[in-house]
Image (cartoon, rainbow over all chains, first blue to last red; front, side, top):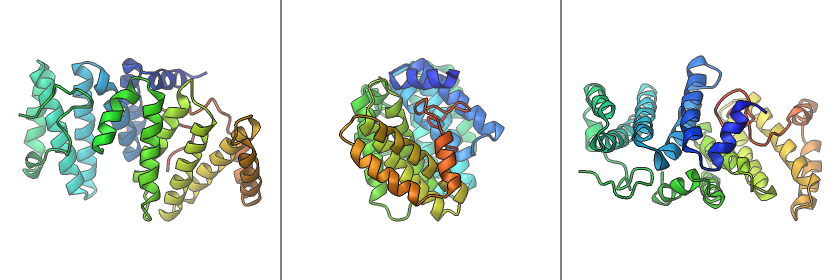
Length: 140
Length: 152
């Protein structure tokens, strides 16, 4: 049985470590061209949401990063509304991580803000009073 | 993501098979209501359905749900002119249907009938691909996607 089979089974039974590992793996396959970029991003987003819902601050930052990547892809392909929504959620997720003391997330916000169109700052995702199952989180 | 989904994701992530099933069923239901499907929309349903089949407590109903998600993905591939992808999806459906038909679940008899129809309506290539698809349930040995197909 391949390593990926084991990882996926672990992910299905609740391992945040396996879910986070799968984020990185699927993105690598997207970069290598073995799967299509959008498919890799959709897959990475799903794994990242799962990992962020139960993992640590690094997993939350990882979700923010994946959302930014997906937003960039969508913007390049003319889906500007979707890109702005993804950017908005990414900013919110990264802010959550930064507020938890994650300096890399704070740096990512600054870096992302330099590249984002203004519209992205006006949009917060619907129902984003929680970051992937972290009910204590609330946008400022 | 809908607000209901955002509540279910943490449960699904924690290994709750019922939440994984609900997420798959929710996406499939929305896809069924949408007449203009694109691969971008169907991947998510496919992924949640595959995730549920990866759970050790999954059963033939999960395989049937995955088949449904794959049929939607195949339709989206057809609409996008991605015929090769559609062939792969439909071959996997045949493989899944055969697996259900081989079992002793209540769905086995229906699956056997469906299988007969599907094989009759398939090209020899599809049938060969289906036969070559071996489950390791849900596991793609080549990348981090949950699945065997090459996408949609």
